[in-house]
Length: 96
Image (cartoon, rainbow, N blue to C red; front, top):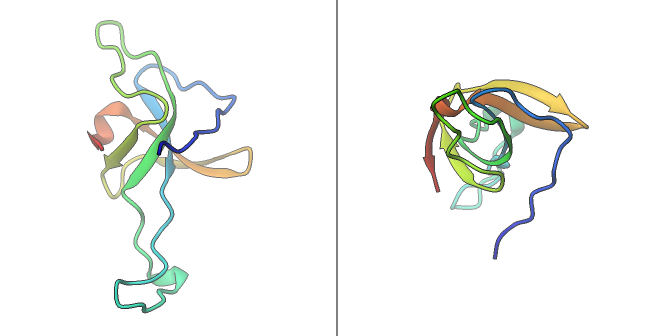
């Protein structure tokens, strides 16, 4: 079942993409609760907006795609109270 993606009122420029990171895991497989300070940054998220691309290279991801990205990819931003990441499409490693 596909998860509905809420639209935002921001359009990234050129080959930029805005991604909503997935929630960090709160428990391990064995049931141990992980405190906020020990959680790793998620490396998976959902595309919420994408720019048009460069002159000869259109953007290949679309809104709603679940993507994998590098651990330190993107810049953290806050839009309408949501914590999001804005990054270049080249920072995206794969579409899941």
